Length: 293
Image (cartoon, rainbow, N blue to C red; front, side, top):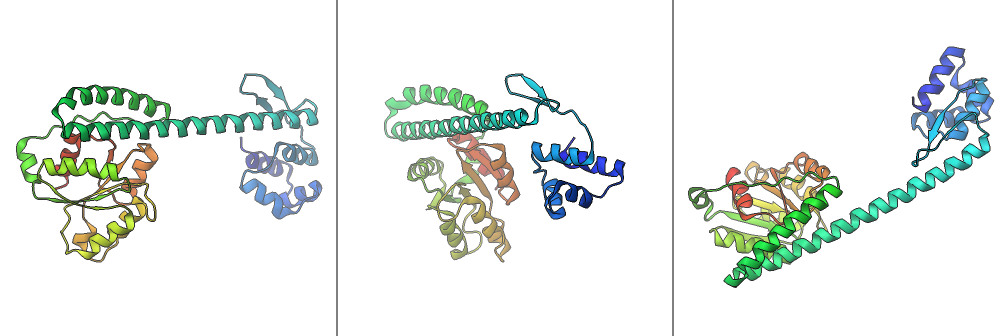
């Protein structure tokens, strides 16, 4: 039961107003109301309020290691132990955040390795075997990282036929990414399949490019999420609010290395049409573009 529910229930049973309770506790009523509404009352304050009401209540607390203690124990000891518990939980939180940060940095390094290998393959057939092995290793490690981060990992295996590829030829894509390597890799893929492209290194330039050209100039926008000056979310919102409906309805695809479900949900909430995770398979990218034609 929440602290506010405990206090409200007891005040109701005893027929006493919370303002009177605050008076007995020696605090202003507004302070008590604020603490109850925000659920910010400390254990010590809760005990004090119960004492002021003449109510005895046993509360059970448990450490992460399984040890437990009761509110019937000495109050000073309980407060001291609660302080230790809070520090333990805070330390666990910092360790967890450091682990997640390290995993995200590892994913960035893996993505870069795959990107460079892809470029090498396109300029040297002998790299095919090496790239295949690297892709397998990368896929396995990314699954492990996604699991450790609590992310949902989908192994898309989209198929696309020659007719669908032909339908994409001549279509223009606006690549929006602050990472030059990412843009270079995508440019190679698009050129290989007959698509045209232009690029922007932040969301602000992407919005300006859409507004500058005639409606329908871009058939697709591949939008990175995390960028300086203006991120992909804000850029998408601005494009969706343009007065010309053809410009505003240009298909926008989120293209990011961060696959957490919160990012995916937010991408769709601001009006993006699909969500791709870097590095993306060529078939997955082309299939996505074809579906949005």
